[in-house]
Image (cartoon, rainbow, N blue to C red):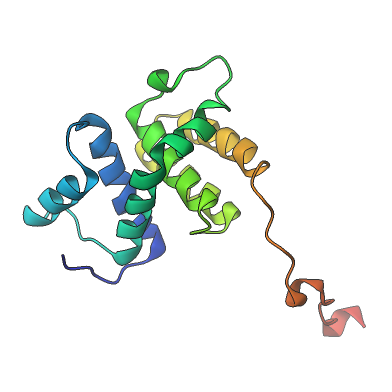
Length: 155
């Protein structure tokens, strides 16, 4: 399998497209879907996209439970395939510390704006915001605790 360098945004979009495809091809493994996409030249693959898809594949039940627990008066099968794939990728990134939470949410919202319907981006934002409140917060680093130096205008 050949991987190419690409931005995290491009890698995430590739992972989303394949997760979306997987939602229709339930009998195929994610590895089979990736292989077919590569064989027909559909998508370029990056190491990061493969990592996200692998984590999603290994932990999909746990990821789906997190999503499901935040659906008020909704069931997973009512979600569009687009929303579900976006939520799965973002929750995977947030849960397994692949991406900072704020970045994962922002990127998911952008994917929803690009691929979803008019309301999807706010729905995705709300669900991911609620999930993010339950995740362990990263420990403050020494750099976070240091006051920022004053700029010329603040002295």
